[in-house]
Length: 289
Image (cartoon, rainbow, N blue to C red; front, side):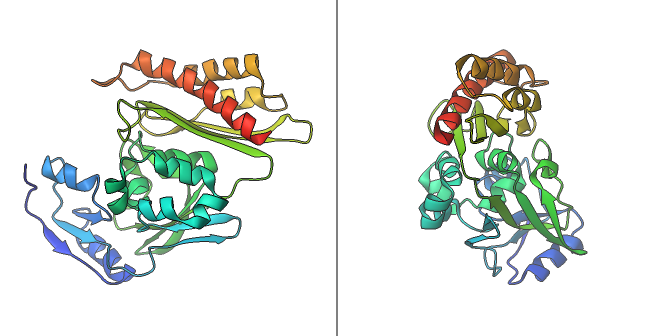
């Protein structure tokens, strides 16, 4: 299969890239790695008038610790995150989530910003951003703005970015003391998109009880989703067997309309979410302790 015809631009500055998006009024697509966009082009599911390649724009490729978070540039390759000593030592949850993304060949080219802006509901980085309460920094014709992860993912393959806005950086908060985490998913083969997945963090107080809990399911709906009723069940309690079992069941019940497709039925995904939520909570609690 071959893509449809399109024009191509490779701006050198962020201002030039924004101007191109504004000029083409929704008919342009950003190329920031191409691991999702190129297959869509080849299947002619995307038909942009022009591709705007961000590869030569300066200042979008970095990983640095600042202000209690890891700031990751939008054009940072996933492989760079995987190999970063800063990520490995200072943010093991980000490293673990990255290792679930496709295969090394894909991570060599795929970017952090590209995955987040593509907003596939079965992808790992959107779920990670939501569970950590990450903050996205976007630049457009009217300047810069910050978008909370909870507001960023709107629906399937759709974000809060305006047509002429570009995601330039994401800040992944560091984990607090006495915080455990888990990244778990089930896929048909290693490297495939998750049929269902769970990411969670648990912070314990001095008595070993849950002070904060964040639990996110992905691959089961149009976006990654938090399950607040399951989270609230654990607050003020010790994260132990029977309680974790009930929290897992509640997490599965909180899914409004699980996806159903050729890979898995809605019922299977709901049951998988229950099981994975319980396992993830248990793993996070063990790490926190």
